[in-house]
Amino acid sequence: MRGFLNRTPLSLYILVEARKNLGKLGPVGGTIVAKVLIGLIRNAPDSIIGSGTPDPDLSTFSLSDLLRLAGVLENP
Image (cartoon, rainbow, N blue to C red; front, side, top):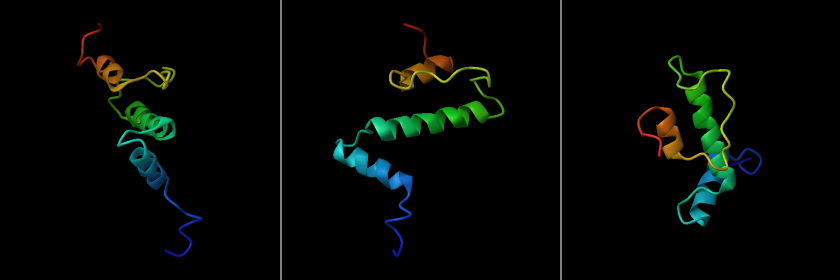
C-alpha cells in the first residue's frame, strides 16, 4: 500500500462517489463513465457513432438516448 495516496486509481474515486450518492454516480463519475463509453463506441470498427459526429451533451445524455441512437428504441 506504500505510495497509494499518490497513485490512487481513478476507479476508486468513482466508487466512493457512488457510495456517497446511495449507489448512483455523481456528476464527476457519471461524466467519466459516459465519456469512456462514448470513446469505446466511437473507436469500435463497427461504430454507431462516426468519427465526425460531435460528442453529445453529457449533462442530458442518458442510456435511453444511447439505445435510441443504436436503433433499439423508437423515438418518443
